[in-house]
Amino acid sequence: MEPTVTEDNAETSNETSSVIQVPMVKDTMSFDSRQAARLVDIERRAQTEIKRKKRKWERQVEKMRSVEPVRPMTQQKGCYVGLHNFLV
Image 1 (cartoon, rainbow, N blue to C red):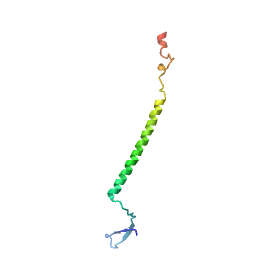
Image 2 (spheres, helix red, strand yellow; image 1 turned 30 degrees about the horizontal axis):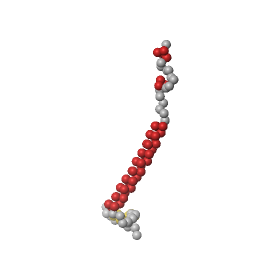
Image 3 (cartoon, rainbow, N blue to C red; image 1 turned 180 degrees about the vertical axis):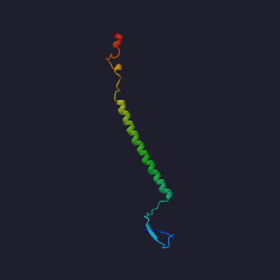
Image 4 (cartoon, helix red, strand yellow; image 1 turned 180 degrees about the horizontal axis):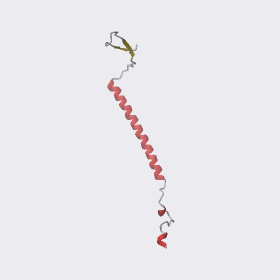
């Protein structure tokens, strides 16, 4: 049987009331044990997210290391851009 809460309105002369259904679930956990379980779940999800972001970061770093950086034209082998003024 679901418990009900009755609200009495004593301000009016009719003495009206309404019934509100409040769903309740009874289990064996205390408030402290429920909070501890929630904290463990939050910490587990946070660790999972940290590991996922670290793997993503490591992949990005490895990708950047594998790509040869583009050097400016003046530093490329066989390029004499900017030097022709000195050779004249």
